[in-house]
Image 1 (spheres, rainbow, N blue to C red):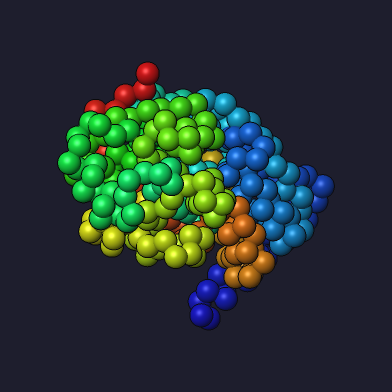
Image 2: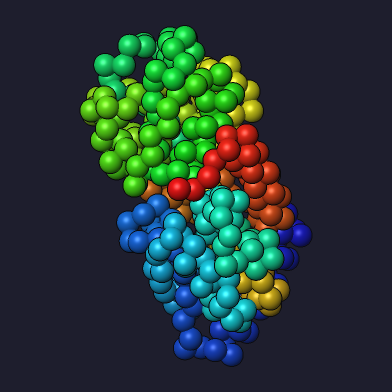
Length: 319
C-alpha cells in the first residue's frame, strides 16, 4: 500500500508540474465512435473524471468511421506530447488489425494506460423459441445442424467472433446472419426471423426485462451483476474457459512521456476507487474490470491470440 501511495503521489506531482507548464491547454479524448455508442459513453465518463482530478479540461472528440479505425489511427499518429488520449476498445484495437490491414499497429503505436471494464454479452432468443433452458437449447441446435441461425452486428464484429467461439465450444452448427448494427439484428431476433444472438448486456437486458427476449446465459465466466439471475454460459453450457466480452480502456500514442502516462494512470487509479465512477460505468453496461498498464498489456495479448484463433478456425473474412 505504501508503494502504491508513493507512486500516486509522484505521478500526481508530475501532473501538477505539467499543468503549470501548459495551464490553458486542454487534453483531447479521441473517441473513434459516434455519440451514444458504448465507447463514447465510457470515454465521456473518463474524460469528465480526468478533468476533475487533473485540474485540466479533457475534451471528448468523436472521430467515427470504418469501425473505429479512423479515430484510432488519428490518436495513434497524434503528437506524443500527452495531450491526446484514446478511448480504446476491442474492435479497432484487438479485432480489426486481425481481419484487415490497418494504418496503425496497436502493439507498436499505442501504449495501454488502464483497462476500465468489459461489456458482457447475453445469449438471447425470441420468447417462443422451443427451449426452456440452456440444456434444451443446446440439445435442439445440436440435433439440427444448419437449421438454426444466429445474428450479429456485422461480419468480424466482436459479437460475431464471440458467437463463433461459443458455437465451436458448445458444438453448434448454425447459419450466421450479419447485420449493419446490433439494433436491426436484435429486432429480427425479437421477431423470430433469426434464431438466436449473443449481444451486449446494454442492448439485450431492457428487452429481456420487458419479456421481448428470452435469456439463456451470460458470456463472462464469473457472471455479471449487470445481468442478475442469468448464469454464466461457461457453467450452464458446460464450456469452462468461455469468458468473453468487449473491453474498454485508456491508451495514448507511443512516445508519450512516462511522467504523463504515470499522471494519467494515477488519476484513473483514484477515479476507479470512487463508487460514483463504478456506478456510472455500470449504468452504461460496463462490468468494471480495472487493470493497470502491465496487466492490461498482458490481457491484450491474450485477447489477440484468442480472436486470431477464432478467425483462423472459422475462416472469417470481411466481405
